[in-house]
Image 1 (spheres, rainbow, N blue to C red):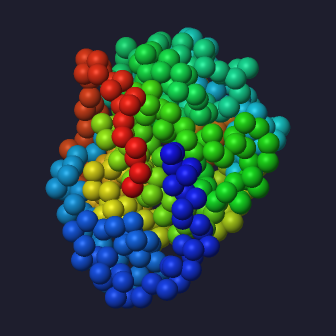
Image 2: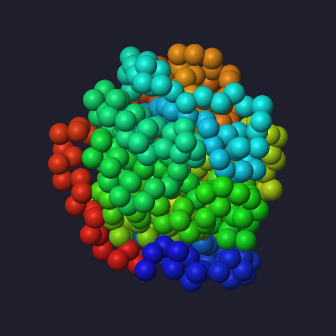
Length: 385
């Protein structure tokens, strides 16, 4: 059984009906739980939640985060290797339909130059990203790129197209220890509408990607929904359900959840629904209560002010100084970007603000010397919540 099978047990129509029936007493009961159930989690996502209840939830989320993680925030940076893509995703700046985008795939010299730039800024934790175009940046290219930069960093993650288990094993052996793979939307009816052609059209293959990564020995598994594509409550619920499943099955791995909201991108796509700041805060708090040990990640898609305000609610990892185009750190920053960054502060400015709020900034919390046992996840448990 994979998470695809679990997903079928929670039809979206049933979730919508259940949310419509949520009453204040249900929310209060969920808030009183020491460890909320998946049904409690759905109540905490209800649009009926009052400002007072949200404030209570925020206080609980902060307390749980302090207990589990202390006052630490990990900083990381994305490094875009390629923006070539064969997918027709309607919302993405890298879409193959975006004929005006300046396309680029970094060569060895450019990869090293970008990596050295980030290392000079203090980063020891980076995320390598590509579009999906094997002709330009396939598995061989990725493995080579990983081997080029792995010696410079203590933690190296990827956010690329979904791979087979064997493909992930190759990258783990090259030096990868983290995987981020957004499902975009868990709505199986809407998914084909937003992904009309290209390999990404395969909903199930993408959905099961984190499981193949866990089986391959990747020690950090990150997921998330692109907020604004589908219905907020159902995508938020499925994200929590998915993370919970992965934490049960791959209990030796660190599971994290990101909260990307749609940002302006080349092509002019507009969200079907707008997820406002209150809903985002509600989701972060609800997830922290459901999953006390999960990492919660906030990127530079969000504004500086909002990121600073959301920090105490459960966030454990943040990007800083991000650029979303290949070669953007050392080259032309405004050419070929995937989406527009909102928080434009430098990594040092972010560090100072985080430290000023009483948090310890962590640039490195893992060392490659400890990865000898990184394949132990391959035969994890069933993962059934």
